[in-house]
Image (cartoon, rainbow, N blue to C red; front, side):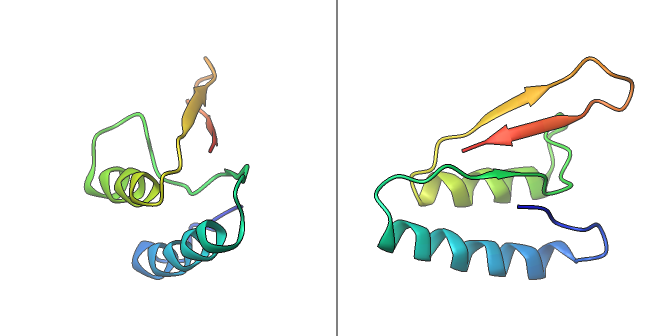
Length: 77
């Protein structure tokens, strides 16, 4: 799953929550990979909203960072 930077976060969060709801309702086990273009290395309201939505739908996530200059983060749920 990928969020292009031109897609505003409120729209993304709305659609992402619908996806999480449907996944929870129809699937017992789900693996979701994504790049949401949210800097998870810094505390922010966007990061907190993302993490609280995942927690609300009982998704557990891991952030994997690389040691490159741009601090890439890949996440698996």
